[in-house]
Image (cartoon, rainbow, N blue to C red; front, side, top):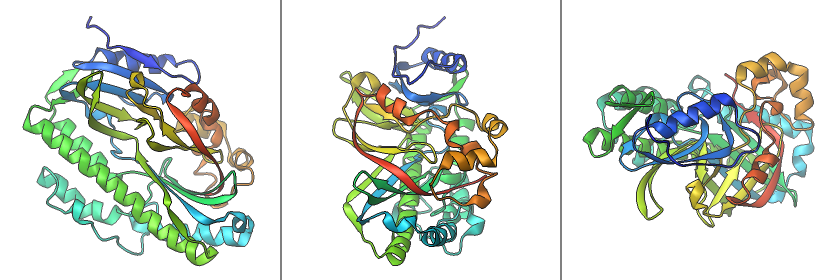
Length: 378
């Protein structure tokens, strides 16, 4: 049996046996030299969400996942959130959000121009260029389903905030699938690519491109929502209050005096002083944080509350009335209640416990309560 890589954990609750088995398998994988598990960790295919792992040479696409570059965008406004207490205004916003930042490309009414950084000759293979021309251009500026959302919030001073969670849409999935299909190294039931080869460099290039796509996607939606809120509420964004981060990537970093490939799947960088966002579940509080630069955690943080129930289990346990009760006074589209049952707040861990479990990793700078949530369904 191969030697296990060192493991360090910050847990909000005892680790599930299924998660432990996955993490131990990752620790046996070739070239893995360090593993850190965040308090929002939960089982997923190949590698648990909430896992940070470092290698020296090999890259494991499954330790990044398919939604490459998925992350957060937040910005504050120069006004309070009291206007959103008006049900008429909340209803208008929910309707306009569905039109301006659609869940799927088929719902969109306008295209977002492709930025120069994402030009169609930027990817490593014609097949990926084809996906970009066929799907990626149409999906830029769309939210996606699952746990992706747009939320209007209030901080402790009742300042109005916008927060968006979304990723690289079909492009990240296509990049992962393309490179996994051509990976040549199999270890611990996972496929790896040697970064000393052209194939490894191509993956690093394409995943960096996907991170840029995801960032542009969030910012495109952010600009649309800002314009909408500006027109409806007569408020202005405060550029100095803008925060952005992502939590699915691999980066070249220096740790313990060595250059490493740090894979984060559902975990965000938390270098000393680095700003980040830890969202709660739909209907619960979220947090703006700064990192403390904990080396044993590979300078990382949880990326959210983390699921405690699978989607299937949540749908079996909660009905529409449960969802509405758990949402309390947070505005959301009640027509989507049935399809959003798997996103019920009680499907997730208590985000406060997650933050307590990682006190040595981050410092809380701001607490925000949700006022209005627009979330993808399906």
